[in-house]
Amino acid sequence: MCLAIPARIIELDKDLAVVDAMGNRWKAKTTLLPEAKIGDLVLIHAGFAISLVDEAEAKETWDLIEQISEFQDTDNKASG
Image 1 (spheres, rainbow, N blue to C red):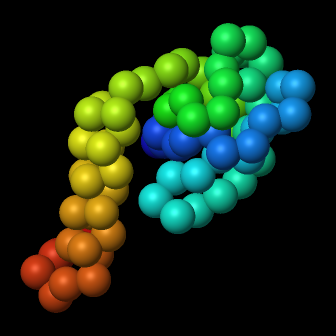
Image 2: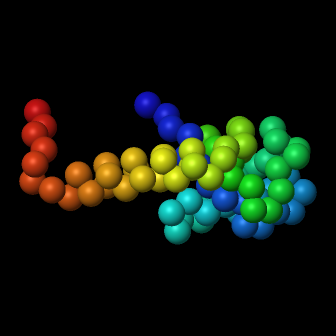
C-alpha cells in the first residue's frame, strides 16, 4: 500500500522543494504543482507533490499517523 503524506514546503528552488512533515524533512519535486510556494501544504507521494491540501486536512492525517505510531508501541495488538 502506498500513502501520500501531507508536508509543508520550507524551501523551494525551481521545482525542487524541501518539505517537512511531523519534524521529518526530505526533498520532493513540485513539477506537478507549478503554483506551489514556500509555506504551502502539499501531499507528497513517491517524491512528488501531487496536490495542495489545507491545514485541517494535513493535521487530521498527521494525528492519524501519530495514533498508529502510538498503537505500534503498545502490547494491545495481535499479529499472526
